[in-house]
Length: 138
Ligand SMILES: [Zn+2]
Image (cartoon, rainbow, N blue to C red; front, side):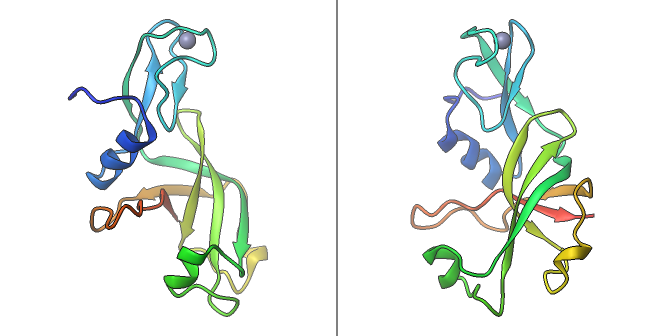
């Protein structure tokens, strides 16, 4: 694994290269996603890269009809909402992500506990805008 700083910027660069990378404490084994340069569990500062499987379960979600400016520029609106949720990865950590593949016209059909799988970006970030962490309902 190449040496990179344990930062959000590194996390998003890995994401563009189709890897979901976090950090693992060498002392106690706690995993962090996005990566951290130190351990919030035992205060250890020896961490290493850890590649996640990209599989997880839906913990919570919101169907967003009034989104951020950048999402409105992507074509999302009251009539074309998007879904943002919290994913618990099989390895333990949770991360917030854009959710694809859910029936947003029937939010009651979206269930917590549903299995999800990461979707990697088609192309690298452009103009400093990061690709969102994205998961698809299985
Ligand atoms: Zn630790």
